[in-house]
Structures are given as structure tokens and as C-alpha cells.
Image (tube, rainbow, N blue to C red; front, top):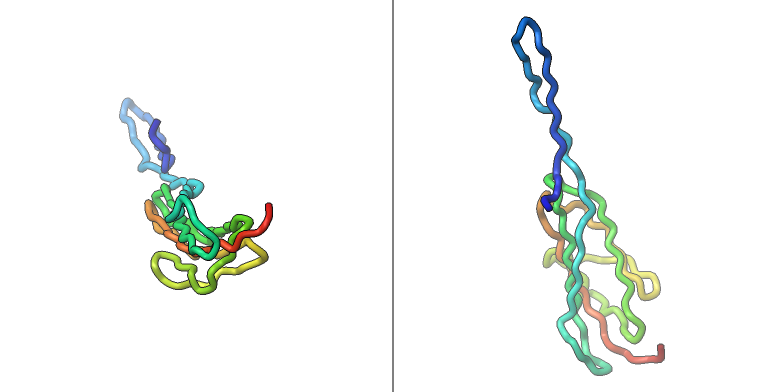
Length: 126
């Protein structure tokens, strides 16, 4: 099944057997972003660093703006200060407890925003 990215509509009028067609009226659809998350290690010990990569995709034919990213780190990990990047550029997220948030200003049409962050395994109890 194909994803619909725009809606196009035309109208026509007939007079004396002649059909006149309007130009299409097109509305571009803004689709919800996609998101995928990976981690660089399938096993780790206390003190090791985990690097998470999150890809937020825009399947729309128009840019999407003001996308709020949020990630709650798992119990037993601690955010590594200064490790947050967006598209390879260092950025400063908001941090509240174990939740990391960042406002992505814009993601280009048919583009991606790639976030990386690190967490140290500190252990603890669940």
C-alpha cells in the first residue's frame, strides 16, 4: 500500500459541449514522524558506556517543524553529560530526572534527524 502524501482535486464546467478543467488544488499532507532507536552494545557491564542512536524520519513532502524528542533512560543508567548530538552537532537537551528532551526545529521533507546520546551503566536495583 502506497503512502498518500498529498491530496489533489480538480473541477470542471461544461458549456455548449466544451469542458473546461480547473488547475489542480493540491494540499500537501504532514505525516507523523517515524522513529527508530538502536544501541551499540547488546551486553554491558557496570561502568561501560552505551551509545544510543535515534533516527526520526519525515516521510512528508514538506518539512515538519518543532518536533519534540523525549527519551527516558533505563533504570541502572546515567546520562553522560555532553554526549548529546543532533545530526552530528553537539546540542544541549533538557534533562529532568532520567528523561532527556530536545526540541528539533525542523526536519526536511523526506529527511531524517539523527540523535545520539550516551548513558553509563551504573547498576542499581529494579
